[in-house]
Image (cartoon, rainbow, N blue to C red; front, side, top):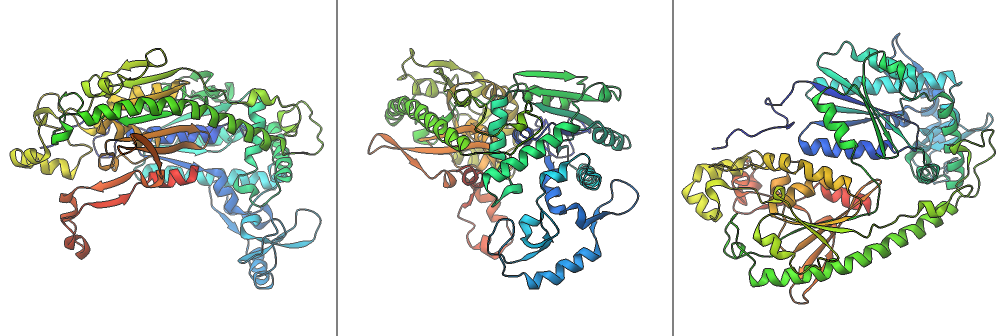
Length: 596
């Protein structure tokens, strides 16, 4: 039966620590906080920790304008309530303005309501989306009412975060600027009453003005500026940023007097400052954040060519390639040679589109702070050459220590590729089941077969050295960190369990789905790190043409649940089809389409 597996953070009663962690982000807008937050959440979830992001900006956009709300109660943690008078006005004007175009984005409106126009006392109809966005004046530190609302929203989200932790969560991320000492002090004081909850501040600092200008231009596509002219949106965002800069105070002695833990990430990991890091969870976070970069590169993942054991359905073992596997190995070498050239051309095209996009901004208004990064328009004082992405010429190939992967890369030119054999990439070890077919396992070890079908992630194969998928995650942790650290492309030639585990990390697929991912022989998965996530492309080997055809990535990753689980379901539909596998889309499909 299933033996006890090490559980670094996977949710059940047997976690390594009862302590929970709150990660509080700090930093000015357009400094890469969202990039860090998404990567960190993906990594911690892959390790098995129950992790969730609580974004203050999303809640703030739902809150409406400061004029529409009043603070209820005496504390700073009570929920915001829309005033009855404004609610009545909204309901009255809803019918009157039902089909008129939105005053802000000029879209023909349905479900519109009335709001005060940005200028003067005129009343104009805004759609629901536009009415909840906030102009730069909302972020003016001298705007006391708006400031009170912003603090209220931040603390409200923090309360939601704490309730989630109390309900069983492990790591919660407070995603906001948290750029003032007062805000951070309030968060520290609120946590004092919570037992077994640690606090870690993560501050993102960017000193590269050209990168900041690029990020600012990209901010015009945020939910705050949907339907707004990009130049108008950029001017407003730069004004917002100047307001933030006036009030911003970096983490320092004010926080150190509370003996808190913090980490400063400067220029996306080029420099890291860690202070007072003590907890296990905190060390996991800091170690990961020290190994990030934005250099253009591709992580290629493929299984080895067909082995002699594959041809007869045996698992594990250490046999060489079959004749079909040898053909695949030769085709793979030609394909990667071609893809290296194609990727360089693709990056050059991205550079061209970026320059055109950056140059499309024409004005951002006058300002009184010419030295501030936020004061420059997108087409002024920008060295476009410094923004160009550069592909590193190096290319590495990583294989396991087993024959079938090493033979798969024998046709690569060692003068052009650096080949490494890494034991951590070896296939999951099946213990006493090594070299057997699944039919033989079901016959000789029926209890083991059933136990594995019921819990493939935690099930550990019997015998000395038998492994589970949970073991594999721990084994690949250092591989993942190294893949995040390196600045050039890599091809990983490995095995099915390893490919499942790696792709579940890059595509943010829950570990509960990981063991049931359909990853046949003959596929190459390409994960390209980008600012908003990993971009997936998939190629399939075509034996008729002896080449690779690109296929739709949104349909390439599937989850196939085992028969024993389907037959145990109670629904009539399941009972009628108990002899069929249940093929369901992977959660990665959303990520693929979102990045397209």
